[in-house]
Length: 319
Image (tube, rainbow, N blue to C red):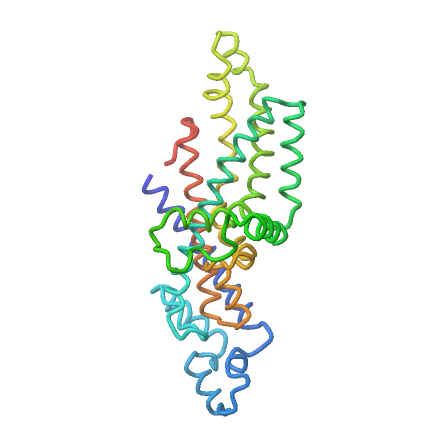
């Protein structure tokens, strides 16, 4: 097991290097000068001051030398100082990443807790009105834009019914340990973020469950007199869940990256909103730190997926 994990992490190094190089080039070659943007409108800033700032942040060096400097520091988990916040970019991103991960995990729980049962029910009720309703809901979940659904949820549950807060992740004056207040704030953005995943998991699991129910070992289980619930839960569902592990591989990274729109709508103080502000301000260190941390999450997600195969399917051995 340890050798397998070490080998997978070793294979991830070229991927992370390629991502770092591509991100570095995209940020550096994009139009606009971050120093001009940062000092815009300040009459006291001279060209000498701008040149000093470029030298301080290493922006006056050739691109290859800049990349080597970045890579050397990144290996020590040092992504440089933020141009906008004048603090180390890594801790700034990690601080907001924790808030986004909370939102992503809540959305993932909703995806699994709602999408899997809906997929199983649709398969067991194939061709009935229940199946048709679930399939329509799945199509709508794919079609509805998250920003529009988020605004609709705010109008309905925050403005009209006044049941849930419309923005932020904590009520002013409340303690961070107030679990009920945190749940009230996370419910709407988590549902909006999870809707596409609910649609994916329900449709995917419906197809897989129908395929498993046609297998010979299911007919054999029925012929042995096993109860329907046992056949469905122990034999059909477990085998249908094996391909689902593939879909879970990059879910966390996808949720973190997909939280950009949702965080803007609900003013959620996570990495999505932070990265968006950094892109607008051409804050190179924060942009690269955000992309690299999300990439590491993706690698970890795929590693967890491969390890989960051995848990779900005893026939698969990780070695």
